[in-house]
Image (cartoon, rainbow, N blue to C red; front, side, top):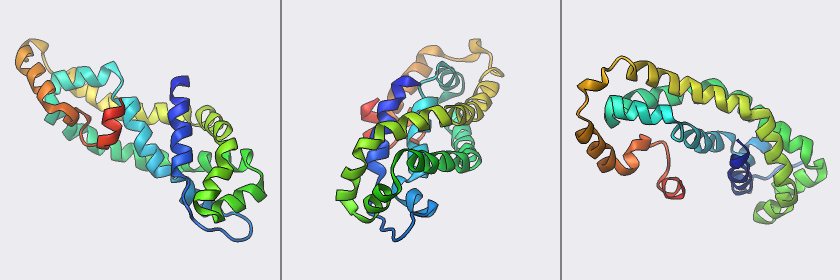
Length: 187
């Protein structure tokens, strides 16, 4: 998970938008700037598609079969775990950015983003510490159903050469549309 700290930090900085806030910064203002759902949706596929289990599921179920299962499991995991991810992200901002800095940063648009730069590492470290269990559970919620189905298939019934060609031909399709094209090229 330590290797994921840099992408989390980059997402935190990139996600900070120009949402204006006046007075004490509300949770909604922090969430609007930090975009927890977009972050969670960007990070979770990177976790699940790097597991050996998802590779086994793709081989056993085929790209279409796996995607038919992964998409609803992904959406269910997002719905189930996003509230905790969001709360952890808001808490990380509140714990690591002085209130006055946070208020001016959220009111300052692009210049405000720069004011948050010195704190992004600490925010990311806290998010990693607080949210690693959330990320792991969400990944398990997605991967387990894939493996349950994959294990029902007799490996001898799979034409290995044809399946490997299918996976190769799928290219980015092996990610079931959960990674954006720019994310797929960074993998």
